[in-house]
Length: 390
Length: 142
Image (tube, each protein chain N blue to C red):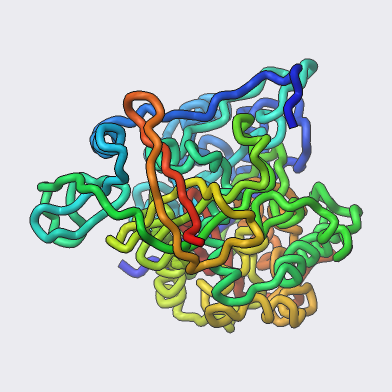
């Protein structure tokens, strides 16, 4: 079955990106979901497929609270930050096969508040599930004081920068570009807060080579999408955004970083060629890139994994101005996880949809027709979607 | 810096199960670093797995290894969420390529962060902590 172009994103919604929300995860997710359903011109009762954030909110809760009596497809995708973009693939399969007619993909969390006790705050939801690699990380990383994402990823990023001579100036360019774009976005947490190269180098080292400003934000937020068949999308209010191709990839072994034959091969390295083949386009055809930016150096590795530039070339590529709004490949036009907020990359898909509808405001990439979104999560899982203006 | 007011935090000791427990018990009993080896094709692997990814055999043994290797990668930690490690920053977590094939993660203890480079020769050893866990130390070979 050829599924390329058969399914479209027809509705998007997102909350504000804040630190210190007074709303529970459930409330955030319901808000974003209702916005997306209304944006699609549908009613909650039209939704019969749901892909919720793993571990935070269940399909059962969403369906019961919004009023979805006919759910026939409910799955969770457990790939950390790669989940939302990988969820598109699952939604497409359900829709193209006729298993479901309208699918809601949503993510939300109190990514700031749940980690910080505030006596005045409402009780917040559980943090989520511990991740599919918990057994390895408990036994082989945690005993050595390695307990957080920035530390896990440094185990390969250090090798990456040393082998290819990647400089901090290159990583800074990713952070600065995302910040520049955040200034164009009313929904970006860091909009209006200027970041300079000096600010970058003044920020403290966390785990080398990463500084604080190489790390994404922690925010409370939710976002949601509604997808349906391209055929059905013709009757809906917005210009549909077509899913031309997509894929997920898992490094091997996915649950342990250090014993991969090539530690620098991410899930995205295997996923990207499959996605481009399905979409029948090449990386250079893209009008914009929304790259999962949990850490600046991960962005550099992803740019190489998707083939926008060769191995070890991403540092020079970003320093040459290619990723700015007026560059060859405008990147993270909403500010990304680094400067808009951290919604596990579902905010990247929302932004890609706005771009391809041509309603992205001040950050609009003129006349864009094609763009891509990547996801990255857990210990290097990857996902990608190639999207087109319908 | 020690602050008398500060609570002291113990370093985390996992409670391994299954194959991980078998691996650690061997190291605790002998005081030697062990890795798992396939009894059918001899391929060494880490962390322990139930089947060999090369020949799919489920027969295995745990064997002592030399501990000789080199720095394949590393992380220099200037910040930690683990309170038991706060006084140690900046500390270096080593990813060691063992001469026997697999890689292990351990704590580097005899070199400053600025003196660590990919490819540096190292020696890996274990220190039993409790009955069921052996901590991995990494020393740079001077």
